[in-house]
Image 1 (tube, chains in turn orange, red):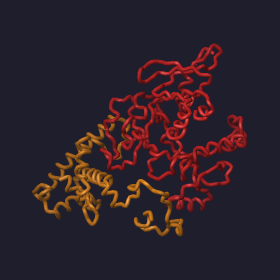
Image 2 (image 1 turned 180 degrees about the vertical axis):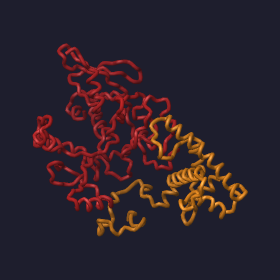
Image 3 (image 1 turned 90 degrees about the horizontal axis):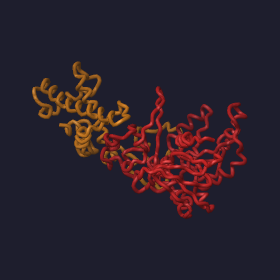
Image 4 (image 1 turned 135 degrees about the vertical axis):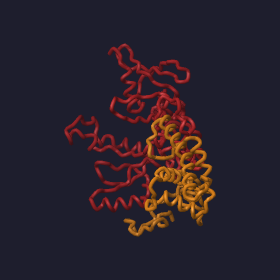
Length: 167
Length: 291
């Protein structure tokens, strides 16, 4: 189920998705080992880390149960047995502010957590970083890749992603 | 230390930590997906240690292995304060990971008391020290540009790092409010220098340079001092106090060997304390003699 949720958050659509990047195994590993991933807490000691990690573990497992309970309430069946339209509508209610329904606060908190784990798990894999065109994958540069926009020092004409990559 | 050895003096250097080994202790170009916890680190890594707080940046899962940073000895802060003290106990110390900003002092610093009326002037001025700055820069390899600003005097520099996009953007904005945006004096090699390779921009500087492309004792001064055979480098030697003779002059130091827990005394004609800001003061405070 974790794998399916991860793939719904970062699907394969031209570029590899969460399933291919092994995000589910990552999430299993991090939750099982109580490694806190959220940046909302300042971790200043082993005790802090253990507390944050244990809390994450409890909330994550409870969140998965919540998803099934919600899916039972809405569609009379477990989440994984719903159709993809049903799964999507359930998830969208948790993800998008305009679609928030009352009494789903813990589901929304779980979704935030799931999304955080998925994004972290995906963009710390080689596959994920490649989809971004992350320059840091190359560890040897013969010359420093300085600014390539010599005719636009104020960078007024930068487009979203492509123009920023190193030529 | 290196200069003294090269001049022929017998030098004993004491370091409170182990010998830094770039092969084992640095990041070695590992990527985030090579790490077991993807950069978040094992939450149990510091379990049981006296000092619990993990240090940022320099100490991370990327260079996990031996603990070059001090966690076995806790420190306390004055009540109501929260001071964060990074202690690297290994040869080279924090200079293994330092920021490499190496600007010269100018007379604005040496003669600051003349300018603002506080404190004392230095007993030297820029004209006197300038050749020594040059000597240091030629040895270390510092990359920057000529800027003609007396508050940050120019030195003998290697070619500067090219500006990135963000640098030009900020520079253009800063120009509009009359603020110069200039390259820093960075002790990093843009060209090969004195046998050290030029930087290859892997971005691992704060976790130790694997090839020695910026000035650090581990790559520059320690190997050269050792080559003279005049250096005795004692590691895991925590200096406890400076010893004085009957007339109150320093005659050596007493240190504790961290591996055997024995206290050992070392005698010398001259004692130099260079233990990092707080630790030097610490040693001096512990060295009160009857004089």
